[in-house]
Length: 221
View 1: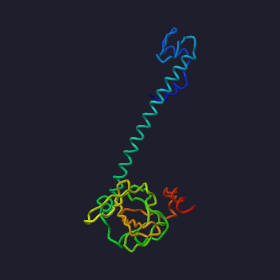
View 2: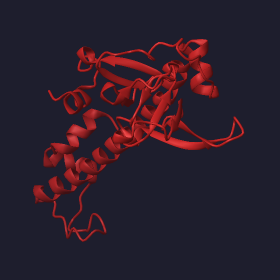
View 3: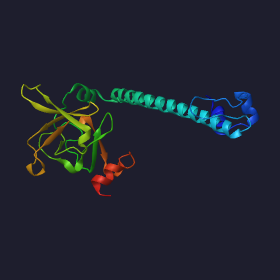
């Protein structure tokens, strides 16, 4: 339905024009919806009926557009993820998509000391904070806890013949492992994470890059 017809539905036509559309009713019921008898000499009956008809069509049109928007939005998200994966380096793809491991002490963030947050390199979701980062001596970035628990999930891994708890983001990015040898005063956990799975957002750039909520929550501003 064109926008012109929708607006004409919202702002009823003169009675003469309505009679051309609906014809003479002569007291007959227009719809079996208990609307009562419509009289040709009562413009209000026509107006109410036409406005109801127009609003119904408008609601259906808007509902269809919302459904279409959400459908394409979901599709775009999937396409953006695939595009982002293709933009990763060979090492980043191997670690994040094939559950690989980068070399210790030869990765980007193992010795990073600036304040900020670490996000999923594929989806951009916040995962860890510099406030929970510590030097474990293992050669990989280590954290006592996630910044956002809801963005991380774990499963048991037997690749080395003994059970380890493997850590993924909820978007499917392989991150690393979590162990029970972390600082006891901070919960006793050590999240050992591959730098290749992360993107570091310095505190000074967080608001600019869309992490204002995390900035205010974790850096007290």
